[in-house]
Amino acid sequence: MSNPTRPLEGITVISLEHAIAAPFCTRQLADQGARVIKVERPSAGDFARGYDERVRGLSSHFVWTNRSKESLTLDLKQPGARAVLDRLLDEADVLVQNLAPGAAARMGLSFEALHERLPSLIVCDISGYGEGGPYQDKKAYDLLIQSESGFLSVTGTAEERAKAGCSIADISAGMYAYSSILAALLQRGRTGKGSRIDVSMLESMVEWMGFPMYYAFEGAAPPVRAGAAHATIYPYGPFPAGDGGTVMLGLQNEREWAVFCERVLQEPALAQDERFASNSRRVQNRAALRERIVASFAGLSVPQIIERLEEARIANASVNEMKDVWEHGQLKARERWREIGSPAGTLPALIPPATNSSYEHAMGAVPALGEHTDGILAELGLDTAAVAELRAAGAV
Image (cartoon, rainbow, N blue to C red):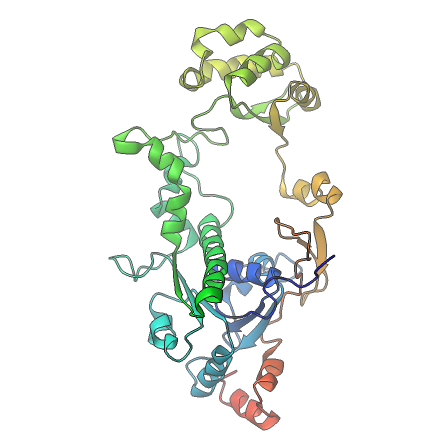
């Protein structure tokens, strides 16, 4: 590679984080070369460590969002621990926190409290509802924000709402925090000054809800809950094959509809049926059209249907389970997996999706609780006796 230096090398991030939103943000900063020091409570640590034991005794959520970080245990209620944090912040570029509403401010860790002493420090606060407003102090978890943002109203079947199968409210907030920190670092490069970033999980999810919100503009009917099918485009979704399998397919325009009728269903006249002559009509008459498609597919296996779809250049996909994704041929062919260390030994990890030709992402180990505490304290100049005193007080 022409330049192996990662873009965030030399940037130090201190994170008071738990669960998913902030850890997902800071893991991406670590992927780009930042040094991320994760401050955890002694004995317990980030409570996401205890969500499950599915990865050889480790939590699936924790393994996913915490590689390439250093774990430092501090009980910030102890004066000695707070002094350690202050010394870390003296040399830091970014502070990220998603503690309970108001907790960071009560500890004197708000941007306003820190800015005069540390004018170049960027402070990123991630919360459920953001600062101000009647919901400021309301507790927020991923499922609750999926509900509050209206996501559940358009997801699931006509009979029952369904949550997303992964933590999309946390993920959306983590992504906006990550990109906003990158922007703040660029801004600081021009002004020399740090800034405050306020990321709301609710606002992050409402941004993602832009299509259904505008679809329901000024009191119009919202998109229907359509299961795995598309709410406003048809045919677009899963269809059963004659061998008991399922094919996922999607049409985007009238040209594809005509080709689908001719080459896949082998019923070219269907394209002229007035009930199906436009996307809006196909949506209105989806039950009748589904019946025709299912009848056509009943005599075909999944491979046969996919062969017809491919020949017609109609978009399609396999309906994969998790085991299928681990073995996905495209990911293997593009060599997207790497091995990382962890307290449970070597584990596979996916390279970040956006690769860069000039450097490789950091793919460091998942840290054990407090694994880097002694090393970080030594960097700060604390001798063995001082560290022992902190341990005896329960500060680290």
